[in-house]
Image (cartoon, rainbow, N blue to C red):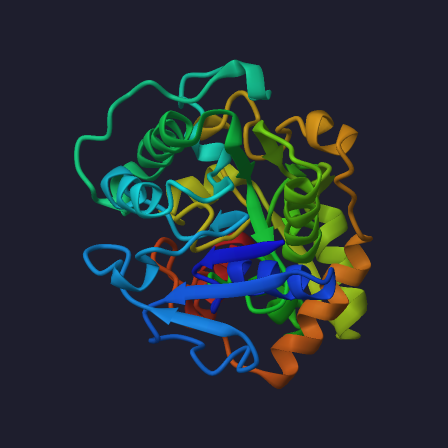
Amino acid sequence: MRVLVLGGTVFVGRHVVEAAVARGHEATLFHRGQTGAELFPQLEHLLGDRDGDLAALAGRRFDAIVDTSGYVPRVVAASCEALADSGRYLFVSSVSAYAEEATRFDEDGGPTDAAPRSEDVSLHYGALKAACEEVVRERFGERALIVRPGLIVGPHDPTNRFTYWVRRLTEGGDVLAPAPPERAVQFIDVRDLAEWMVRALEDGLDGTFNGTGDSTTLGAVVEACALAGGSDARIVWVDEALLVDAGVAPYTELPLWIPDSEDPHGRFGGTPNAKAVAQGLTFRPLEETVADTLAWVRTEPVVTGSRVVAPGGLAPERERELLARVAA
């Protein structure tokens, strides 16, 4: 299978390329040559820009396209048009495509129907992803495969949203965490997602799938991180009301935490994944994800290049300030 990865040099695309090559496929990367251009020197690299320079795709046809870097409908439409004669088109969307007011997040629940008011991804991420989905469905029909992951974690993650906990627990000392430890959290190891997406293309799947892991708890995550790092970390569980009152930014300044008031129906902790699991999606143990992420953290710096979420986590002085408030 000839696979074109739109992206392929930062995080999700990088692992898709690795999975495709490992399974014997011929992979080609299309990117701007700005981040990770030295990766996969044995493979074909097509240089261009999705927003205005698709000349390198002219006259090319692939058995499958994996779009890991589509955020704006207009840009996704241009890629679809340039690759219209190709085979299947897998678009990596997001569980954020579900409407904020939705009460169900299975694939039949449908995405938001709110039209994005601008192309500002930071403001309208979910609505833009939903609109991109529609573009792909309109252009590719039964050849379209939409995958909606939640939080994606693992080696080479540029966002620091999961890696923060791996790093922080390894450093030791008093570690602030949002109570309760039973808080449901959900994510997927990028390698599990990437391999399943390649297999889904091999199997000719179409339609929409939530590409999420099984739910676990924040307590289980921080415990696994502490054990992997072998540190003397002591978890200080802090009531979320204090965090909200202190203006702590959910999910970015304190990763994996969204106040109950902002996620009343549990989209980010309990999105159903049964449909994808029935089609072969499997998950490695949490301990393996943590250990491999820690091994990467110890050998490489945080990757730059994320267009959506800046590296997050509590600054040390901010954490000390909050812990002092708790102690008082």
